[in-house]
Amino acid sequence: MGLVMPDFGLLFWMVLSFSLLMWLLAKFAWKPILKALSAREASIEKALQSAELAKNEMVKLQAGNEKLLKETMLEREKIIKEARELKNSIVSEAKNQAVIEANKVLDETKAAITRERAEAVNEMKSVISSFSIEIAEKILKEHLSDSKNQKDLVNNYLENIKLN
Amino acid sequence: MLKVFRIFILLSAFVSSTYLTLKAEEQLTTGIEPAAEKFNASKLIMEHIADSYEWHIAKVGHTHISIPLPVILYSSGTGFHFFISSKFHHGTESYLGFHVAGEESKFKGKIVEAASDGSEVRPYDFSITKNVLSMFASILILLLIFTSIAKRYKEGFDRAPKGIQSWLEPIILFIRDDVVKASIGEEKYRKYLPYLLTVFFFILINNVMGLIPIIPGGANLTGNIAVTMVLALITFVIILFSGSKDYYMHIVNAPGIPWWLKLPIPLMPIVEIMGVFTKPFVLMVRLFANITAGHIIALGFYSLIFIFGEKSVYAGYGVSIVTIVFTIFMGLLELLVAFIQAYVFTLLSALYIGMALEQHEEHAEKSH
Image (tube, rainbow over all chains, first blue to last red; front, side, top):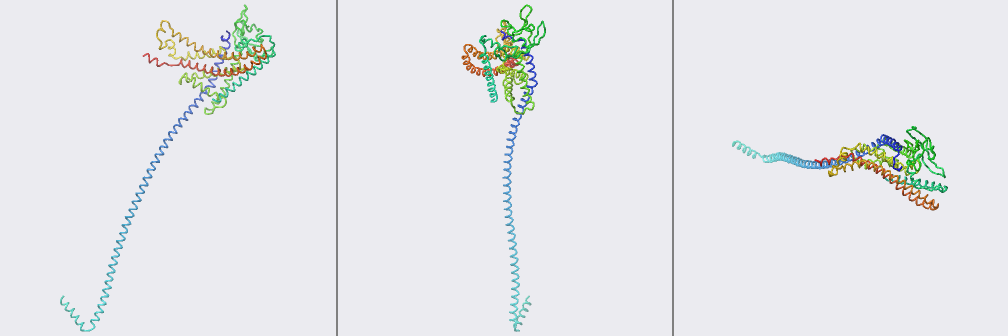
């Protein structure tokens, strides 16, 4: 029965050395090891969390970018549309302006032509009148070359004056 | 996991190879030995699994090669004595009135003091026996291993595990997460973790050292009742001191049990109180019995060689082949048992502590 009877000496050494072992290991091994393990776990957890956060941030950023892009597109379209409208309005205005200008020029030209014509007509009239006077003179000279005709004419005038 | 497995394989190869060399030596010695004394298997086995005052290494011819160990005695009559166990000449002579008790004594194999009336009295024996020395060696190894890996952890938690650390870390994490945290609970497990980790590695290293038949291995330390008793007692004391009010109430007045099991004869309280003591008792016996049985089986296989060798030398050689195969198998099995028993002791200790800590809110609700 020696096998199942605990030995006093071994009990003594076991209690003593196991307590010492436990104390030494707890102080110099388990404490730093477990601390490091939990610190590592915490850091992994933190890293995972921050990765998740970064992912969310990224998604948000992407959504923001998309929105921005959409807005920019809209803006661009608006600007293009506005520009087109502006262009159209400028062109039409220019056209109108040109038409007006052209009309003005036409009017002016017409007026100038009218004026020139009038002048020409006047000049022509004066030339014609001087020609007519010359012709009349010549005719008169011819006609009044004899005295009888001169007398008749004077008489005629005189008569007309008397009538006045 | 692969790394752990690789080390497992290496260890088992080592164990089986040392078994083989030892066996070869023993075969040599039996070859020379005259068949004067008959081979006694049970004596060999019992001597091996029991504690000893000297570390027996081999027997060449008729000379024992062994390392004598220090003897420390306190006798109520003559006080303290320190001497080397070689003074007993392998238990054949007496020294200072002390001698190693013989086969017929009830203190068989222990140092006794001859009293004046001729009876044998056992002094207080603090001797550094084979088991004590083996325990010191295992403690030294544990301290070396764990302080060296702790040094690496101190360098910073962000360093990747390296060397021995990388196969101890999964074990530490396994004990922490799947054994201690799972049994005791998230809030309170920290307090019990150092004890349970120490117990696990102490049992594990001593189980494995018990499988290695060269110094400082080969002692049957975790198969010694004194050692398992101390371990179980520590668990018991922890349970007693950390038991919650609910735990003690449950023992005295177990809820959900009919009153007639408690009132005239306190049947359930008696069962529960017995349970308090059987838990550590079972812890003690399970480890002791498993490891001792492992040693007995391994030695039984060796003894087969000599039992057959006595009939005929050739039968001994023939059986040795079978024995080698069986011993390798048993060595591997015992290695598995070494891990399993360390795990089981730790797990059950953690479970019992967890049970003692439990708060039963649901019972309070039911009583309203």
